Length: 325
Ligand SMILES: Cc1cc2nc3c(=O)[nH]c(=O)nc-3n(C[C@H](O)[C@H](O)[C@H](O)COP(=O)(O)O)c2cc1C
Image 1 (cartoon, rainbow, N blue to C red):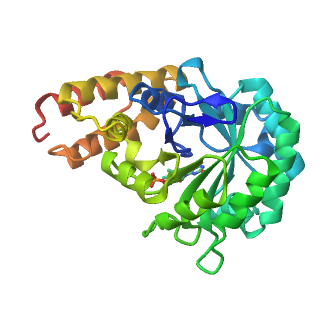
Image 2 (cartoon, protein in one colour):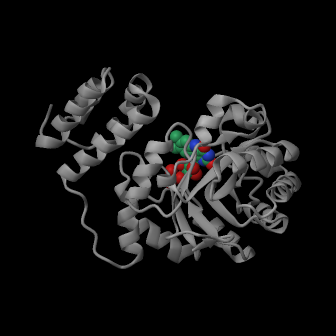
Image 3 (cartoon, helix red, strand yellow):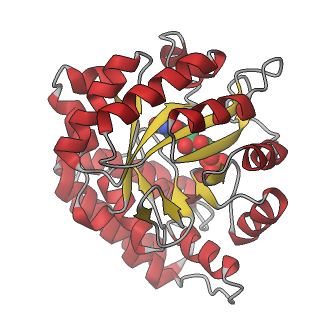
């Protein structure tokens, strides 16, 4: 599929997840078949202030591409300046606007999903970012179904964004009010798809290959975006690709999984240093070992890990026998 003038190998995207989709995570998801990656959300204001920590979040290496860089904010001129600036600094394949974050500290600032309460503002933001980018890279938006059950307006916002120049729309088919609670209303994705001409990518509770096939059939969307199903499971992209191509899929062996976790943790430590890397690795390892016999007690041990060496030997232990710890 294509987003603007950028070719994406397949329509299976990694969803932006703050605190999760860092460089190491994106690399692993690409390795196992994601067609498009996305950064964690990045503050447009902090970019404009030249904040170094924020700039680190926005860095994209060659091996994680194609990768979108997601910005959040609410002021059209700041979003526009930030878009031009991150393009110059990091050359993402596309820039995405966060119109879906439900976190109170974001919503109370009028950012994230709060933007959907004001479709005209969504239009202004996209328009000013497009002008600032001047065709240098495509611009996408990630929306929800609406802010709450009394304001279901995904179609209206999608049309406004398309009119303002958006090149694709990611639709998380829940309201902000729902946060991450069921149900996901896939009919909203179909409604948006029928209302706009640009690509529409469906998102929400797509956990496996069969889910992806069903959502694409049910809604007619052009691609799918995967969030939580990829945590501790980058193989989900390979599975989805197989299903979408109608091919038989074989899940990775325990040894393949062990190698994958170790590679992920090595990259994390390489990127962030041992102190931060090992601490951040704890949650990833806990996701990877979920469901293995004895994983609850293993998780407690993982949470006490202080060094890469200790973490690696726990991973070996977890995936060698598959027995209780
Ligand atoms: C830990 C976490 C962090 C998230 N951070 C972001 C974010 O930075 N930007 C964004 O647009 N959505 C964010 N989301 C929402 C996801 O991108 C996605 O829309 C949502 O999880 C639904 O997809 P899923 O059911 O496949 O997980 C986040 C979700 C989770 C679980």
